[in-house]
Length: 455
Image (cartoon, rainbow, N blue to C red; front, side, top):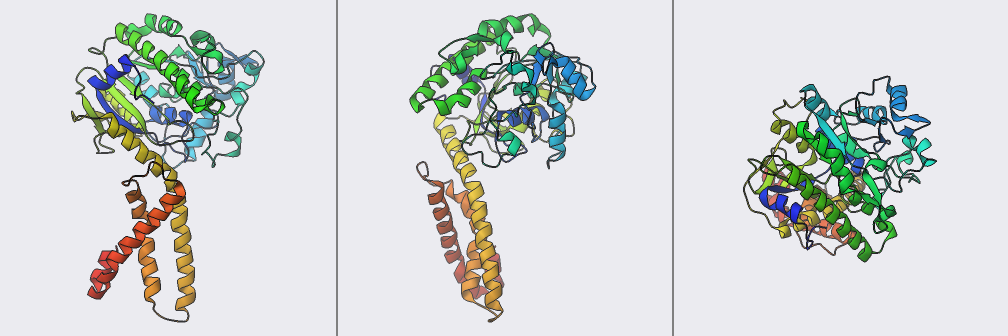
């Protein structure tokens, strides 16, 4: 997406700071921007729920009320902030049903408890709200499925007429779903522009006009490149060539906004992070992370979670922000701080890492199903066979082959695979397991060493 484009301000962050491929895994099996932002703000793998994009400025009209009235009606809490996440109850309940015990809004609460000020600016609505659609949009599903999203709950698989795009609030809200400052209103941030999807784009002038008066006492500022989300949502309506053109327009607009922010708050005095919370719809894989500022050495980034230079996780953003601001990291944050290694990086290395991530993501489910199916057939056949005969080399070999299937899945991504389909990858995976089983088979003559070799 970034290769070959003239993006001087983004390039400045990449060149002067620490960069890595970013794993955006959340609490669910599918990737979405909503879950990505929820994970970022929780410092743990989180679920945004089915209303994750339903954030509004307190005075916006929604659900035949103001957003503040709707929020109070749903929660009973005071509206003590500019932005309110109207789906906060659904998000909390959704995470109670998950395995990770994530607390959405942990980052925002920690900063607020420390007396620090935060703000969010972004709106990825598309199509934008009208007076008619605004009445009931707060109850629409937040997630619009991509081509590979086949396991969505029924309520999330329904693509709404108007797609809210305000999940960026998760990145700075507290545990009650409140962001102290900022705006996610389309009227405050967007302007008409027929070149962009849905005929609107993020206005850098409007955005900076909102940010500038508050910047002096802000400790944590989140600004979303919202045009990129609209481009990704509309890509199924555009040709491949035109989609690439739209990506270029959105990136150029985002790069210009970043340049204006750097001019107002210099890199030499402030820590900047470039974070992509979710991969493009229907593709999967890794995204990009970069941070630059005082004390950040140029090169690859790493965290104690991944322990691999050039690879970090989305859960590491929250502890990195808290550490930078001198705030104690809460116990329910499972991510670890991201740091710089000083080791050089190349764009080719990141492209290769992303390709591996895409193939691994696409292969994970079919490989698991193939392993379970093969093992089930083996067990049933073995039971039927051993009922008549106590031992069999054929079944012993088949059992060893099945044990190598999980390991062979990880070996597939080390091979040249760019043009391979999932079916071909499965065949290769089975073949690798077969080769490993054949190599191990002669060890059976050494008695117990045979068991060690097979393991």
